[in-house]
Image (spheres, rainbow, N blue to C red):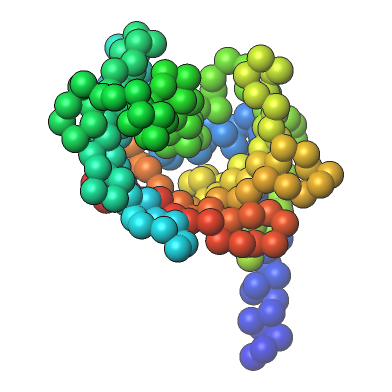
Amino acid sequence: MKTTYLFTFLLLLSTTYATAQMFTAQEVLQKSIEFHDPEGKWGTTPIRFELKETRPGGTDRETAIYIDLPQSHFKIDQIRNENRIIQEVKANQCSYQLDGSTDISEADQSAFRLNCERTRTIRDYYTYLWGLPMKLKDPGTIIEEPALKTNFRGQICLAIKVTYEEAVGKDTWYFYFHPTTFALIGYRFYHDEEKNDGEFITLEGLKTIKDIRIPRKRSWYVNEDDKFLGADILQK
């Protein structure tokens, strides 16, 4: 009986590997996009979602994100401790509210880091991570061939390696996909791969917003020692 089970497991494993060999990295990416965004809504329609952001030893943050790429409009509405902070970018121009007021002292602007450079960075951060894998079609993205067969956190999966043109980014990324559904299951990045620096992110569950299947929970860890850094949980 044990021999039969072992044979069945090895057969399934070899089938998974054989399937992986049928696809290029570009094909894996396209199939993942078709899974997560079958109607092509990302980048063409506004989307709003609410998060709980948890950090070890810190307080949870309640965060609402609004992204309207066609109108170049981004808004983040966040509760930090007892303060409500709204940062907004429209056509690359920034505006702010602190506890309902747009009259914000220089001291508070400094304390809460309310400056346009940082707000644009926040915009790019949320738009990139919550727009995956669709964002891997953006200009300046370099998808390396071939697709890889690998193991990510104990799960057999397909992987693609991604780098960027110098003007876009300098990190090296690996994205991991379920071998049959092509759902994105995690990713990791390195500033310097030889030093094993950077972080990896695991994904759990899915929520559908505007016909887009978005990972429900993202958990962050350090590559070097698997130290847990926090989680971002999609509420609605």
